[in-house]
Image 1 (cartoon, rainbow, N blue to C red):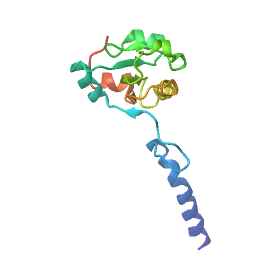
Image 2: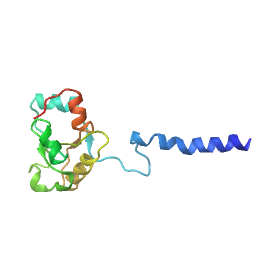
Image 3: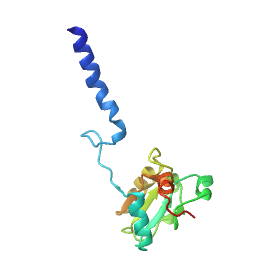
Image 4: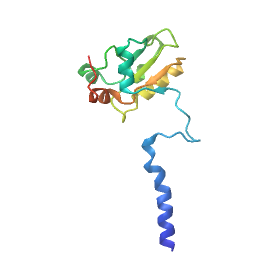
Length: 137
C-alpha cells in the first residue's frame, strides 16, 4: 500500500512538470503584457498593408539569411525608443528564431517598458514563417 501511495505522490508532483511547455498563467506568474499573433495572421496583415512595424530579434547571420518582408533587424537587448516608431500606440510585432526562443519576449517586454501599448510577438519565429512557405527577404 505504501508503494502505491508513493507512486501516486510522484505522479502528482511530476504532472505539473510535464505541462511546463504550455506556458500557463498561474497565481504565481503574471499574465503577459504583450499579445501573440500567428505567422498566418501576420502574413495576412502584411498582405493587406496594415499599419504595423515588424522587428526581427535574431542574430546578424540569421537576419541576412532571410527575414520577414519589411522587418527591421533589432536585437532584443537593443530595444530603445530611438529604434521604435514615435507613435506609442503603433502595432509592433517582434519575432525571433522559433517557438523555442524567447528573444522576442524580451524585446516585447522592453517596448512595453518604454510605454508602447500595442505590442505583439510572433512565437512561430522565422522557422515557423518559412515552414509555412511565406515570403522572405
